[in-house]
Length: 207
Length: 123
Image (cartoon, rainbow over all chains, first blue to last red):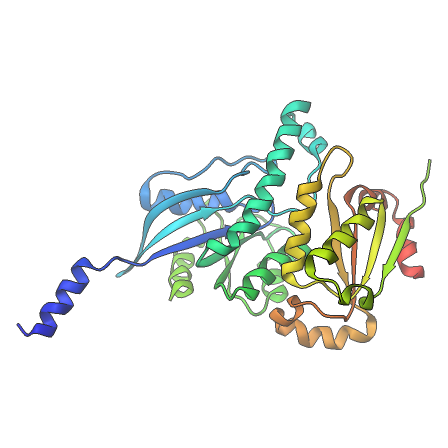
């Protein structure tokens, strides 16, 4: 065995595998945590965070470290970074309508505002991002444009995940035509629809 | 009781010489006076993010946040279509079009009573 071959084997054995910091960004209730949970469960057997129909369930950055995602003969290590939904307004009375007490609603609103601030700050700490959109909603809104614009300005690779593709109102084409420069992949974090293709695209994103 | 809406026009040259922090401060000051800001041009994407952050810092029982939208002029539609193909350019901010920033509570009122939106079209 030549010195070069020996060095190659030694290097492969002991080098630190690349760890990709994968951010989950998007508006409120698009399904960021549901998506992160499914990925985490598929490869670690554990979920990452709780989900709820009440907006702003995720109010702190949640991280699942060193999740090894495998697809065919490829594998990569990720830190999954689930962020609170970005919003331009938070009205605590909306939470009361969902059945929370006034105090719970006010607390949730206060924590949610901090969550939005933290999510934006964390843009500095991610290597690539899944922008998770609810494919039943109109994608052309300022929150989505602001998120994608900030990622573009920082040259952070983006994959748009059109979630809730299992619903009849899902309009993935509408997202594709709104953001023609980006790859859009339709999935349902609830049912698992589209995940095989999604994992393939995830490797293309990191490449 | 129907309350009137106040629309404050901010021309491009009024913000052009301000840094991002000052721009956002000025916009939010007007919005917090319960006025709708009609801004000539668009904010850069970083400024939009900063506007959201500053808004979140100020939310309290009286201030619920903002609504923000970009309006494209008719003449700019063709330009916009070209630019839309290059989303990064759209997002960098420029003086084409208008940006409307209003208090969330007032925009909610407009949604309840769409006649109030006439203010925009009369402009």
